[in-house]
Image (cartoon, rainbow, N blue to C red; front, top):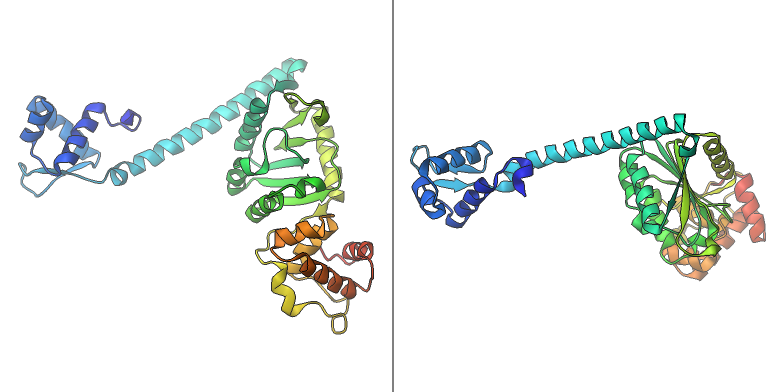
Length: 339
């Protein structure tokens, strides 16, 4: 198995023998391995060149001892990993060029139909791994192929500097663990917004490839989806996303503090004028969930406080805004630019 980093099986066997003996001379190793002395000498020299063996002192006939393999081979492993990553990116680029060539000459390659949960999940992962600039998502409730916690590729892409913009259906935020998962994504750099309903499920990568399911969720069975290349159809899907992004409500989930931390400094309508008030990070986080239509119970669960605390804090904000209804508070949040 270590042939891939330049260590032959014979060298590995010699190194393991030396590990068992702790220290040994060439003759002892030759006897234990039943190999010619000249062959053992050559293999010892190869191991010394790789940094896996060294003599115990300056005497040429001194016993040999092994060195730590992770130190000696770590740099080689890292180089191989970098080479493999470069090769993977190159293959992805060549595959895109191949598909682009097909699309230029064959109109039927503009749309590829794929079927099955596993195939759809693998294609979503491949596209995110190849992303270089931006990934766009329409995230509906009850995911078909990939639940939020399974999408580890997003965090790798965000770490590479890829921008993520995601719009979530409100019902998805009510699913168990959904808000906690969204919080991790936003903390990593995702831009998240919410709408009451989304027209379709959709993912668009780098403005060049989109994936969109072909049949309604209610039809059941194995999902099928269209993989859409550069075309006027893709332009229409990009416009669809941008139109929904403009009207969606921003989610503020990246602050680590909960509303409980604000209990000692709640907004007071008597000494803080609404026109000059700007919500702090805790209030903005609560307001973003409130405006998104998340129920008080779910907000409390997300923030780690009681439902009564959430209701009291919303009442404080209503007093600051000078309104006595929750719709009025939502209107004032938008009018005053509190989010």
